[in-house]
View 1 (cartoon, rainbow, N blue to C red):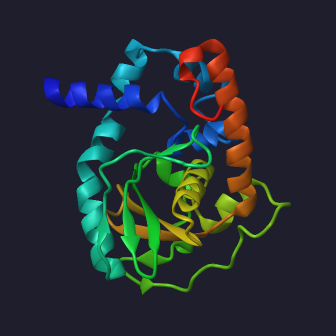
View 2: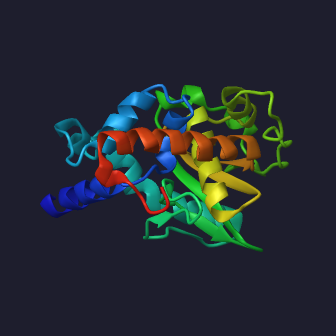
Length: 234
């Protein structure tokens, strides 16, 4: 157990040296739990707070970590292609303040992201399973319209049209940008029916552009608080 905790803490410390996919919703102001200023303070600190150390031991986090291999296995079966989890952390060459860890990736004509999540009974209110691209009972459904191809609609509106939470919409966009993919998938295991639902989301160039520019602004603020966070090219 101590070794697992140590690895989790090492990973959390490594994540401080960049803005990852899970930070994307905070950067764009659609995360209900963390503000942009809190993110800046977190990234600027060289050490983990007791609260940050405790995150990895939360029940929902441990459940997601333990069930991730199962969801990946099921997604591979249902999609008819191998979904695998890259073990490395990546950094965007052109935007070094942005980093990426993938839950899952699959390859057909190119690489595509497949984000993996567990949906608790409490969190289910943020989803519309009727809009899923795949359902274990019905199988594959039609690919949804390209709701992402709009500069007018908000992130919240687009996410709702796809049937997923805004904070996973931005995370998927970050991953699609990293892989230059035209779409990405969100595979979730629901606590309430113990079935996998897979959502299809198109690339959103407007959100991806904002992640680059707003991410740069956030990282500039981080560097002001901690000059050691300055990256090559900044």
